[in-house]
Length: 267
Image (cartoon, rainbow, N blue to C red; front, side, top):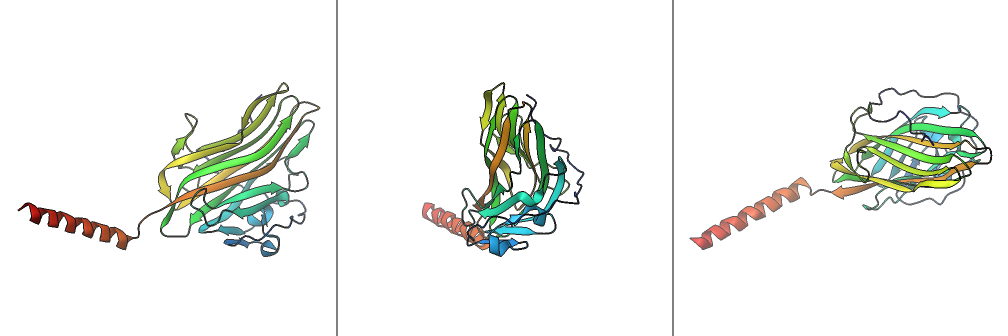
């Protein structure tokens, strides 16, 4: 079965903000988490933001990570409703797994019974606000199901250094040939599960203060009796600390004193 991997791989340079979203239904109530700030309508009331609000200028701050500059890149079919995609901040005070986001879906969005395809493509920027913290790796996970013949639920993600999405944020991946890409999959071919990969990660070669993310959610059913759905997606950005400049200078000075002392003893 052909996977639904999009053409959002390295070299993506064109962005189109899709207008004319469907009616927005009220999000489910979630417990407010200390350390998470929602800059979107009713965010402080519901403890989450809708993707439809985020692409209209909203943002989420989770600990020292700011998730902003959300952009909707495309929908298949066009009646997929970004107002049914609910986004919460998670793990705000951790270095491992690090601050991140959780996506859930209302009104059976990204859930199919019978033949069809639903996809949504979007992007956002993540900034590290703490001057002494850097992003060192990035993890992705999901909960999904697929049944029947030729069905799949998939999330694909690409990470870039620049807003034009032309410079890949390179790192070490568990699969050869993948550098800035993560994929989580549940695929059924001819009534047999052929892929069940609920988590993925990248250890970045460099540490980053800013990254640009492009993400695809997709479900596809070919058989008449098949089903496919994504119920939850999680993403975390692990971080590392670096010594403050004054601390580094102090360590260098102490090292110099130690060498000087050793030299005097040897004379």
